[in-house]
Length: 264
Image (cartoon, rainbow, N blue to C red):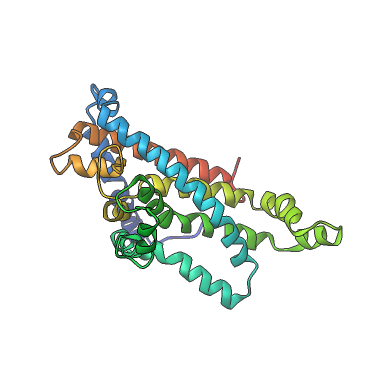
């Protein structure tokens, strides 16, 4: 079969789109001071931001797995109306400006928030703590996990689960030994995307958790702080930006290898 013919003008538009995506990254790489990049990336402030980001993103991903896998299964096994409503709720953080999400979290869990007053009475203070970073990251990253797993669970159907049931397997056994293995590609891809999104979270964290070094200053916040004339140097900010770029590319390559039908 001969390849489809594409109007030549569309190639020009496609090239412009690629340039829009690639040239800013080229500009970033061009500004890297290769002679000092290792020193910049290993400065105390940079290492503090890096360590905090890796820690909070890992915890946030674990939280998302704990609640996201059950939610994905519920959506995949629900009827069209309920599944559509739940999917819409899950999608909201994807289209919501991150800073609005941070404000929403602050109004919910802040000292005068809907739940914050009760938490304060119990001696629990969440805003502007490391825990707030985890909550903000989980809020924005959860949809990536849920949608990836839900799509895989829906595509594999329920035939194998029904067969397991007829053979005497209980619901938990079926879930552990049938559903989860079948959903493995979506589970891995969703987990990686969730971690990557948590690692790069900025807006909700800035509003809900603040920007205290060693407590809430993650890599994105350290980069922002540097370019506003405080905190880490611009050299460290560029080095951290390069590190985030490399991590993102590696994660995308990893996810591509786990997609259903991907060439291995």
